[in-house]
Image 1 (cartoon, rainbow, N blue to C red):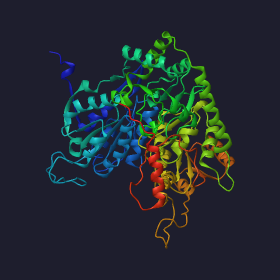
Image 2 (image 1 turned 90 degrees about the vertical axis):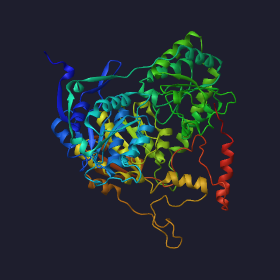
Image 3 (image 1 turned 30 degrees about the vertical axis):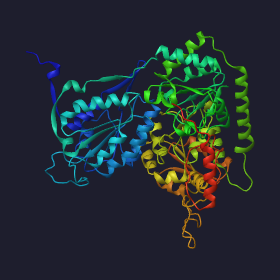
Amino acid sequence: MAQSPQSRTVRLTMSQALVKYLQVQFSERDGTTHRLIPAMFGIFGHGNVHALGQALYEYGQDLPYYRPCNEQSMVHTAAAFAKTKLRMSTLACTSSIGPGATNMITGGAGATINRLPVLLLPSDYYATRHQGPVLQQLEHPISADVSVNDCFRPISRFFDRISRPEQLLTALPEAMRVLIDPVETGAVTLSLPQDVQAHAYDYPTHFFENRVWQVERRSPDSKRIDEAVKLLKESARPMIIAGGGVFYSEALDELQEFAETFGIPVGETFAGHGTIRNGSDIALGSHGTTGTSAATEVAKQADLIIAIGTRLTDVTTGSHSSFQHPEAKFVHINVTGHDAHKMGALPIIADAREALRALTKAATEAGIKPNHAYNQDVQQAKEDWRRMLKEEIFQPAPGEVMSQAQVVGVLNQESRAGDTVINDAGTLPGDLHSLWDSSNGTNCHLEFGYSCMGYALPAGLGVRMAQPEGDVYVLIGDATYLLSPSELVTAMEENLKVTVIISENHGLQAIRGLQESRTGHSFGNEFRARDSVSNLLEGEYVEIDFARNAASMGARTWRVTTPDQLRAALNEAREEVRSCVIVAETEKRRSGPAPGAWWDLSVAETTGDPATQGAQAEYEEGKRLQRFYY
């Protein structure tokens, strides 16, 4: 009697089975297929080198292994890779037990908050336990099965501890399902006890056959489309807020057609920056607390806000203060019901591309036309913004060194179609959000869901892996560079060329400015020596040679102090084959345009300090702008 395919088995360790399985997983949307997990990043320790390392060496011919310098950084790399691949592919990340594992939590939290798939494989204690507490094991006094890896639970969209090798048969398919689901995606964690990694099991051979995971496009409910068209027909001043979901749905053409057909201006979130790419008249640029003045003014008077693929966080809504029309209504297109219902919106729970196609068709049939008087107001607001940039923001100030806004402007001018600029935290996300012009075909990759210092440089490696063409620019502050410069070594090892531009303004100037606005004072945020009289960090500025630091890791470096020097360095860096670092001296206490909208950042309710009392009065005045929607 012939043996059925289901009864055939192969004896493998759990780690070997994991490696073989990951190599045959694929995603597919609209007929295009991608490797779901094309590579694994990891740092070996005693918790994973003996088994998972062995499996990668013996069976990982189609799962190349990359070694970063820091576990947090490799998760950032995976998240950026996934973002560039529009969530159709991601990377696996393995660590040893203990600190190597917990180092991944920050990166995992950022991935989940930003709805980006990453697969985390932290090692864990011995499941058999007879070894006694093993090196780096947490001994919880009342729960013997708890380990530090349980810290992954709240930041993971799916978590499982593999305490027997056969548990992979159910855990891995569920992990892949969550990774590829646009509604549920985020960090997925499979915790791997050290001993179980090496334990063997007779796995069914069909478990290792190619599997294609379909990414479906959910169509909108026709009733919701009709309701949205009715609201649009009644609206005199509609506005669109475009988020990252527009990119992930590949709905850029549909967004532009819908907006231009009906004359609806578009403001962009951090994740949605660049969704309108050709300098269209309906493009307002950035929206929110770092928005353009044009987007801010339009939002204040909008009577209908159509949100598409955004989480509507406080930086987008100005902590619920941006929309001041007394009859403002909301429509929200989102694949996730949790987001689609925010701010009392009419929810259209659907794929953004499909929803926009349906909405465009229905609105056309309803005879909706642009409001030309409104569009003229929008153009005037845009012209006022452009004039301010030209006459103020990009101009040199007497007695000051090059501004950070000038750095952004020069980089924008020198970038080309297909290039990508990346940033994560500080003043630069706001400057890039408001100043970067993507109409030249460039990409602006801003991580501001978690605002995670240390993301941008390793993210540059992920973007480079996913996008071989075009230059990858990592524009960061000096404090961010100090947090994780070591991935320059990974860039050298793997020949992943990135160009890092460091804005050297001698500290965390974003928080210094925030501190002054909320307390009336500044201390502890700049690179300054301790003053012997005040005992505060307000002495001389500490001199740090960032160029020599980067050169020691193999990068070619420049130090520039003027826009012309920066321009020359960028041109030379484009021709360089290895990673480059340009250190640009910038004015310490001046960044880009003032915030576009109010942001709810509280002030001490009671204080005897007159400066803080003044900040409290300003804060209370701002709170009066807040509105709540249900």
